[in-house]
Each structure stands twice: as structure tokens, then as C-alpha cells.
Length: 365
Ligand SMILES: Nc1ncnc2c1ncn2[C@@H]1O[C@H](COP(=O)(O)OP(=O)(O)O)[C@@H](O)[C@H]1O
Ligand SMILES: [Mg+2]
Image (cartoon, rainbow, N blue to C red; front, side, top):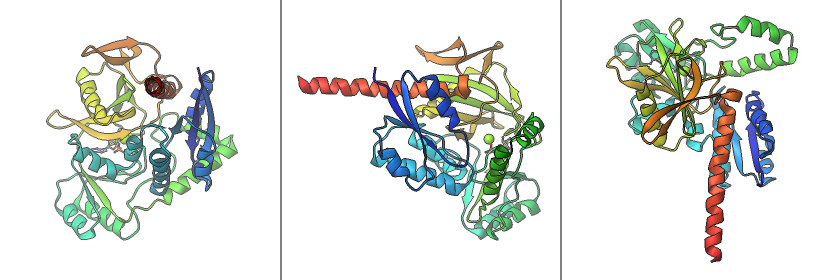
């Protein structure tokens, strides 16, 4: 069979694209690939230089300027050049964009914590002066709990708005996320590798340069001890708990691997079927009335353990078979789940190839 030829779209600001490269290497009997730095000025020529079957994307979440660059360029490659992209275009657009995600969830009628985006300072001040407390302030980009402020007093809420619209930006932390377990060990390892350390420091500097001064995002506070993280890749489903430490469940890497309730998968299947989403982690709170509420949706996400789910202590996945959720034990999350993604993309493209061949055959008759 003819090999698939892929372009991995990297940025110069992180090494996450290596996850795609590792799995392309693992499937080298079926895959040929190039790595293209989409932050360079010749990005378009580079992608046009070879007839790629598809793009393997790794959208950045470090600043909104980089995120916009990535979205714009991938959009052109996908819609104008017609190149299939994995994850899908819409999955990339809602990724690491908390305000856009809130519009998307509301417009699609998906339950989520009530979220308000203010571009008008006075309107935001009025809201901060009257909304029930605590209230949550969020930056649009900035992963691992760094851009999220739990505002407990009226003064804090009002100051939060003033800081944003005065150009100071909301208070937040950049730099190492000390909540992560094993961070000290990692920091020491990094110190022994000066090049890596330099890269990390540059990343923090870029992160700090992000000032959100045009708008404020406020969200209803949902008390919780954990979030469910439900992962869907193709027709494989997984779930585990992310447990709160301090007042955040994000970035702590504290996991709970008890058996997930199957209603979670019904909920996430419904949401991801809406738009044929391919690769999603959906972070879910349980609201005061017991309803599932979507906090975040991400097409690419870290994986700190070799699996995403344990059922009765065994790693595996759920799939819907004849209307029932069926557990299959197995090692489906190898290479941080990127092998599952790559195989899924090839399956989609393979089906398209078969359909195209059918059409050609019919036209020939
Ligand atoms: N509406 C909310 N109510 C209560 N806690 C929240 C709310 N939104 C976020 N948090 C807490 O803050 C953490 C980080 O927020 P999140 O929106 O997931 O951002 P990110 O993971 O990108 O930093 C969450 O894991 C959760 O524990
Ligand atoms: Mg989160």
C-alpha cells in the first residue's frame, strides 16, 4: 500500500511536535513525514512543496498571538489548500481559547459554568460589584491553572477588572508550576542540560509577555473536589479523575483511577458527535444539582501516566458496540495516546481513499 505523507506543523516555542514524530517513526512502514516550522515566513511554500496527505497539528497554548498565528495559517492550509488536518480545524479553534470555547459551548447548548466575557470596563465593574462570590476570573490562554483566579472578596473582584483594563493584566503566575509532582527532580535534570533550561526560561518570558487588557472573563464558581477528564480519540473512550489540590484541579497531576460511571461517556459522545470531533479531552465538573458541566475541551493534552483509565485496576478503553459501552482491556495510550491518534487519522484518510477509488471506478464504467 502507498505510504501516507504527513507534514507535522511545529512552532519554534515548544518540542511537543516530537510526540507526532515519535509515532510517525513507530509507523514508518506506512508513514513518511516532514517537520515544518509554521512560525517561519516561508510556511506556505514549505507546505506546498510536497503533496501531503494530511497535516499533523500541535497548536500552541502559550500566548494568544501565537495561538492566532497557528489558527490562521492552519485555516488557510485546510480551507484554501484543502488539506485534511488532525485534530480537526474546529477542535484547533476552540483549543486554549477560553472565551471562544465559552461562546461555542453556549451556542451549541452544552451545559457549562455560566461564563461572561466583558469588553467594556464599566460593564465589567458593575458585574464585579454585584455578582455572587467567589467568582472565577480566567485568562483566555495559559494552561495548568496559571491564568485562573478564584476571587473571594468584592475588593479582589473589582481590582481584577481594574488591573485588566489599566493594562497591568490580571494577577497570575508564570514560571515553574510547583504543584506538579516530581518537579524538583525535573528542575535538577534541566539544570544539568543548559540548552533545555534556556528554552524553558524563554517560554516563561514569552508567557509573561501575554497581557490580557482588552477583555475580562468571569465564570460562575462551581465547588468541586475533582474534575472528570474524559478522553475520546476516534471511537475509544477513557476517563479518570483530576483531583483538586489548593483550589485547582489543573496542573497538579493528582489522579484518581476508580471505575468511571458510563453516563460520562454518553455525555461526551453526544458533545463530540455534534461536530465529528476526533481527539478531545473534556474536563467536567459535577454541578450543585448533579449535572455534568464542561469546564475545558482540549484536542491535545499531556499524559502523565502510561494509561488514561483503569477499570478494576486494568488499563483499557470503552467503545460503544451495538448501543452498549464495552470495556476492552489493553494498552491503548502508548506514546501519550499519539499512536491512537495517528492510527485514527490513517483510518479516516484510508476510508476517503477507498471512497475516491470507488468514484473513479464508477466514472470509468
Ligand atoms: N468555574 C470554576 N469554579 C471553580 N473552580 C474552577 C472553575 N474553573 C476552574 N476552576 C479550577 O481551576 C482549575 C484551572 O482552571 P481551568 O479552567 O481548567 O484552566 P487551565 O487548566 O487551563 O489552567 C480547574 O482545574 C479547577 O479546579
Ligand atoms: Mg484545566
